[in-house]
Amino acid sequence: MYDKAYATYGVPKLLYEQYIAKNPNNYQIYYDQARLLHNNGNYQRAIQLYDDYIKRNKDYYPAYFDKAKTLHEQGNYKQALSTLDTCISLKPEDYESYHQKAKTLFALGQSDLALA
Image (cartoon, rainbow, N blue to C red; front, side):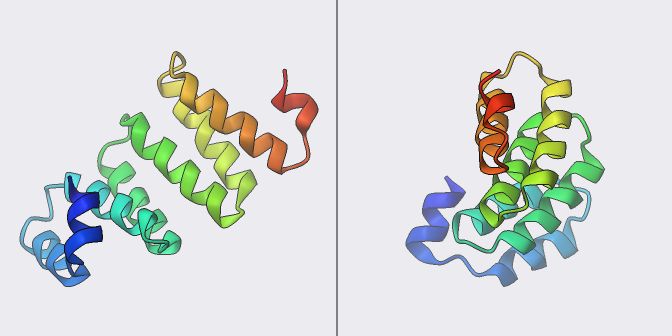
């Protein structure tokens, strides 16, 4: 929902920051804004917001997964791998995390581990 609104209407970053300032305990907004920034190529800020969200909700594996994807897209493969390991430890049955880990290993030139 937010992704489409941001892409269509260009919801300004300022509105999110104002909302966060008024509602600092509503940590879902950090995750939502991080996803929007990721989808619009602002990877560095997205990672900061994923980290802010993870500090407040350490067991929400999708935040780790999305952060890992962002790190991967930035070329930070080792950090992405570490983040994916955390994601997998939180929800080992999530096949997407293994798939993303294989892609990251492949990007690191470790295709033998990616295929294992």
